[in-house]
Length: 175
Figure 1 (cartoon, rainbow, N blue to C red):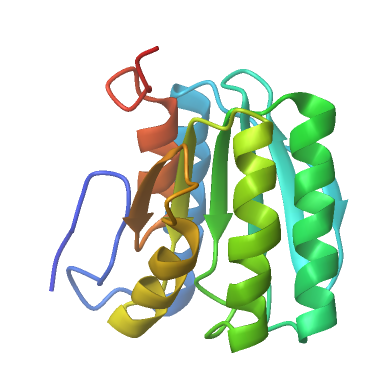
Figure 2 (figure 1 turned 135 degrees about the vertical axis):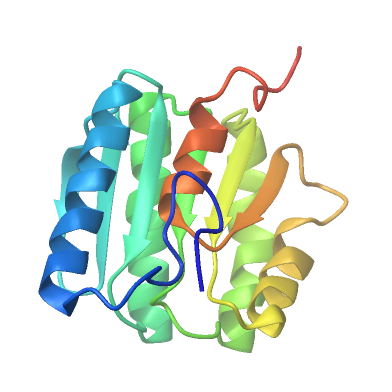
């Protein structure tokens, strides 16, 4: 029981009523975003995913809300790629903690379509939030770290840590 980092609470330190814990965690997240001057601007929201832009830091984020079908996965990822092109984003955050394990056809599509597009757009950093299941991260890493990959990839179990890494100067890719 305890904290895993200053940005993300993994477990409750004490037996605090659940509602109080949730409201504190939401407030804490708000203050972290505010302290880092990162206020998200929603670009697309539906029952499967949410795409936001952190214009102050040039970070584009995709958060899956529930496991999508393969066609919904491609639709959501295509919306993210369109936003990458439109906003010239070089730093991406993909929160897959609620997405579920990717289907094999999703992994193949990622390798052959998504990775080349990200490289064509000169994306520098990709932060992936994944559940604690190690096979989930391995599957994604195998598809996203091909010989064609041109970005720095990091895995996180917490959205706030991923956002902090992308917005930190030490996480920037040197040109």
